[in-house]
Length: 68
Image 1 (spheres, rainbow, N blue to C red):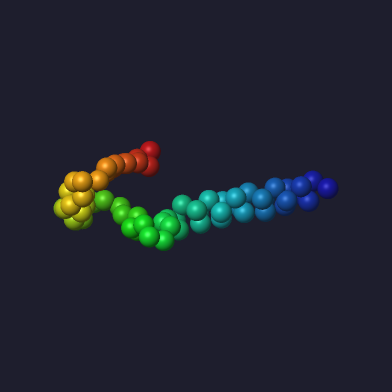
Image 2: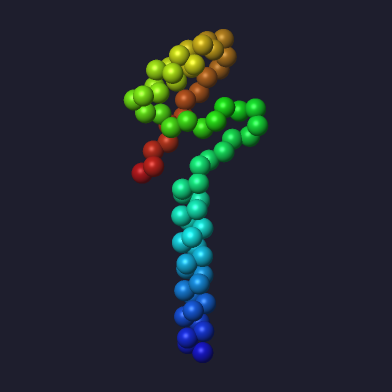
């Protein structure tokens, strides 16, 4: 009986691990009509600044999230 519980626990933990890895490493998505998600870095910050500054007549919000 103990072996059955151990294997059930092991399969559950492996399933949770696999689901976590899939969730973390699959790219995010946005609804249709919205721009794609962008990861800012030194190469694309100027493009972000120009796109952000184009729409001075609209309310704009920048949200930065840290992974830590």
